[in-house]
Image (cartoon, helix red, strand yellow):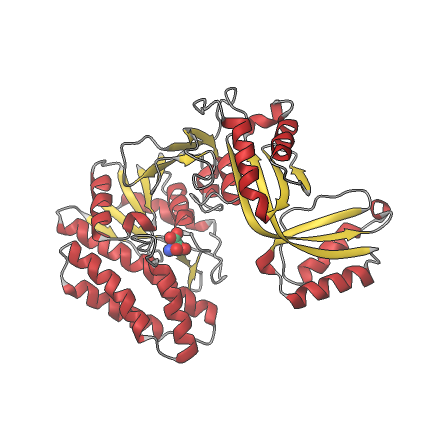
Amino acid sequence: MKVAKFGGSSLASAEQIKKVSDIITADQERKFVVVSAPGKRNDEDTKVTDLLIELGETFLENGSAEDTLQKVVARYRSIADGLGLSEDIVKTIEDDLRSRLAYDTSNSGRFMDQIKASGEDNNAKIIARYLQSIGFIADYIHPQEAGLLVSDTPGNAQILDEAYEHLYTLRERDGILIIPGFFGFSKEGRLVTFPRGGSDITGSIVAAGVQAELYENFTDVDSVFAANPTVVDSPCSIKRMTFREMRELSYAGFGVFHDEALIPAFKSNIPVCVKNTNNPSASGTMIINEREYAMNPVIGIAADKGFSTIYVRKYLMNREVGFGRRLLQIIEDEGVSYEHIPSGIDDTSVILENDQLTPEKEDRIIHRILHELGADDAYIEKDFAMIMLVGEGMHETVGIAARATKAISEQDVNIEMINQGSSEVSLSFGIHDADVDKAIRGLYEEFFSTKEVLQ
Ligand code: ASP
């Protein structure tokens, strides 16, 4: 049995949903189908989830949001019309949206979760209805009925272990099961969404729960590329890669997958295949536990902007017991998480995402570091990017760092920080935001210019 997950661009219109239905029904093993909300039909379009966020926020502000509600209903109406479904499903969707707007607004996070989740929920209902209308046995499955239990943390759900046992029982059900992605339910019965892009997480959880032999993730590219195709001209396709490699790449900016999404499939040893809804015969990218890496130790280059560095210098810091803990405590007290902590003897930097900071938090953090930790110097630098070279083969290959730093220096880009985890599956460089594209091109040229087929 396979789990197939379809992303928003695969389900953005009636025409796309017809393609998806052809894919589902072409293989009897595709029994579990996880769907996103309708995405963009073109570059100027708006994703339904973004419309829903606008709907919820406008409603919270003004107590009504009729225009936006009508925009959402119009998206579903055009899908239902194109699929030849009757108006009553559109009416059901409109009623559903109105009843969600009547939900308690005193906790805005919970209210927003109700509204956001309707995107996938209503799309799943439409798709199940369409499959039935063309003669297939198909059912919409509500995540609560499926036992998809999650933590009670609005907008940031984490799966609870017992959910997997519940999901396993879905194997007994007949026909094709259409499950909305992006949300689950807490033990108290509250709807809770995963972070943005979280339908991938649902897909992976369902694959682990039903112990699928394959988790197919359908998107709008033929495969995962070794570098961002908007930066590098026709980058190579990756045919096979490991979970760790994909996790590192998606963490560092590869948009193909949500970076948390692979963990459930990985833990259950279920291979994942990234495929293209618009070209389903292309073989896609397989993500597996192990690969041969003799051909190319580096599999991809990713980059992400929007980091800040808290730089701290204190003479003899290395000899002071508990300095690191106390520094991180200050950051924890502000509710901020960090990404990396590269250190020298008398100085250390804490790298974190810009959007977790506010001017007030920054002032408090720097003030405490200077006064409570007695640092000689402390300041925050912005507009920092992390560029990451990823590949399982790196730990067995001498000279990767030398080649990478040379390639970056040849682009006249200054490296501010270098970090290599002990697993040696990735090597990251901190550089200025403005230099990212140049550095990616330089690294790509160095590691991929021979265009060998990646194994
Ligand atoms: N619709 C949600 C989002 O746009 C979840 C998803 O599509 O994965 O973030």
